[in-house]
Length: 407
Ligand code: PLP
Image (cartoon, rainbow, N blue to C red; front, top):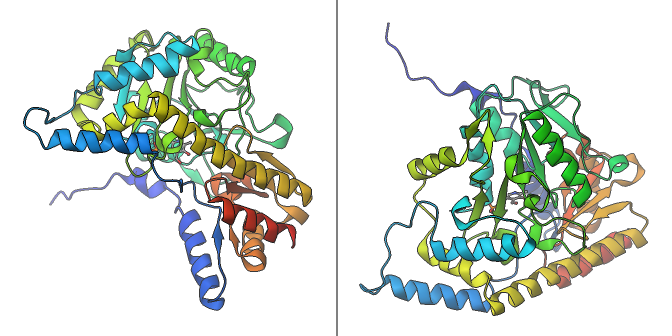
């Protein structure tokens, strides 16, 4: 009999990702019915401010280098250029007291790919734990690999995944799971809840992982938004983290690189799973499946750490965080239960009158012309919650909140 090519049937287990397509459809329908209405979007997690001038200058300079035979660059080194890895090691880690060396940093084109791909270097038998609600990439990439079991539509969960509820009662930070996972995805500051984890609390996770031989996959994509002391910028600020944690970083929300694309992953040389070092596996994977972030983008990344670059990106972050303050204060004054927004560009609000997340989405769109993201789209424990982002421009943010207040 003719043997036909077969698909990876794990992909069929993925429930449809209706969140952003349903939002888009509802917004289009509303716009058709109300052609004069000016919709304000506080739903998407994309930045709106342009790349800072110092970074643009570095980009232009690097582009010119590419047109000159003396300075032209071809393929980048596998781990990324030394000039970028050493400034990252120094500014993001050594200056915060974390002993991370440049060759423990793998430069990439963003945190999404790395968060999605990292599971490849682990056994399919590993049991995964995620927060609920959660950034969907962690679960979906493990579904594709065949590590999650079947989807249970009634529970909206995969049978073999450990979901760690993040609720008001636990300050939207998970409890240590009683059933021990092998791989633990943590993201702080958190998308979607905007919650953070304090250092003593994160230390408990590190101790737990070291005690049980688990690996923490720590997504610190929003690290630059931390404003309070005692909130760790890196998991390596905790004792023993180099023995149990991988960290992901992104230039997307730090410096407006969502369109330029740049990020990095830290894998300490000493980090082992089941007695085997992980660094060589990720180095091999990187070398085999990835050909490096563009030279010009790595040069732009280097400029983020220059004195002017830092100052300018901090101003942008402050701008977004002022938006967050406007949203938080405005909604609190209007009687909403709100959290997040202090060390993260996300505001997490409880829907009023026991509305479901989607009912509140419709209500906000129809009555105020404001678009946000239903919390239930991030997991079952996101139900009755709603996410607003601080990434809009000032004028729109103020107007959106005024409209919500006058409902
Ligand atoms: N991790 C989290 C928690 C995010 O919210 C995002 C983007 O929204 C990413 C990673 C992706 O970052 P990047 O643009 O670097 O791929």
